[in-house]
Length: 167
Image (cartoon, rainbow, N blue to C red; front, side):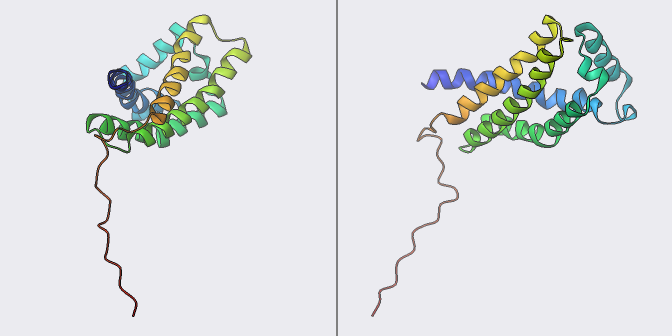
């Protein structure tokens, strides 16, 4: 089980690194003014939107802007915590991973339902978005894995206080 957990952690480490960079630089362009971003990032987002036909980025429907705000204000900080949790072997990593995975899975359910239900999405666009649902599932499963005794910390535990004897 240890090698399997390490493999999952390596996959999640890569994913959280991508999110740590892409969320503030690319995804944030959906809901923040263009003047906040350098031209090469704006051009990169335009290229992606045209190359993959990502109408959500170009049309910016209200629900999608809300999903991006959720990503920036909730999921992105959790991704940073999870990066630290993986690298420092923190015992709370399972909990934050479960929270992140649940949030990602939920938001991707809305995005994928729109893409499949609208009839506008190409197979190429679905192939780009679908793995995020898979990463959500992997994060949830990692969060549900038992914490080994080696990673459990004594930090936060109080020493037992002696009980006073009643007379």
